Image (cartoon, rainbow, N blue to C red; front, top):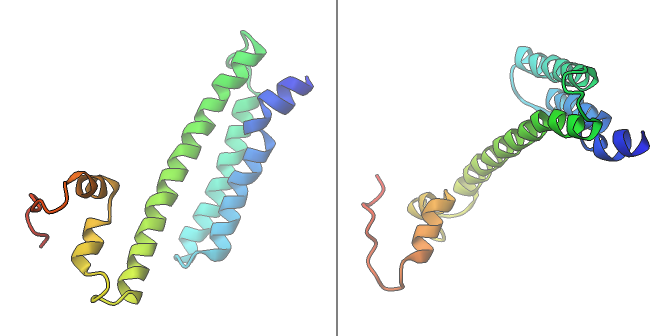
Amino acid sequence: MLILRGVIGGLWNHPTFSAMSGAGVGYFFNASAAPWRRWGVLLGTLALAIVVHGFFNTPIVNANAFVSSIIKGVPVLLLFLWVLRWAHLRERRTFAGLAADVVPDDLVSPADFRLLATRRVRQGCAAKPPGEPDARPPAP
């Protein structure tokens, strides 16, 4: 039972439920959003933690305890990947806004910020041989 509940299921068990509800508490106290949105996120993450806890305690997949624990962890993994992507995009928008206000235009132009905004554009610029003219149309 220690291996099953502590090691195999421990990755997405009670620490995950606490993290879900804790993220809502953190958002509630730190966000500058409207009160109804802060309360909605707080109650929504608590409800999500309760629902996911109930999902892990249901006998939906009980063929093998190891397989059951892994299958029940897939939704939590997908949720984690979605939150990670959302946080990455939010952080990128935040830093782009801060950099546009703080960095003078003579150091980094607004066109350079647009070129550095996405990984695909950066990789395209890096793949271009030095001295070759830019094939992209100028940014508006």
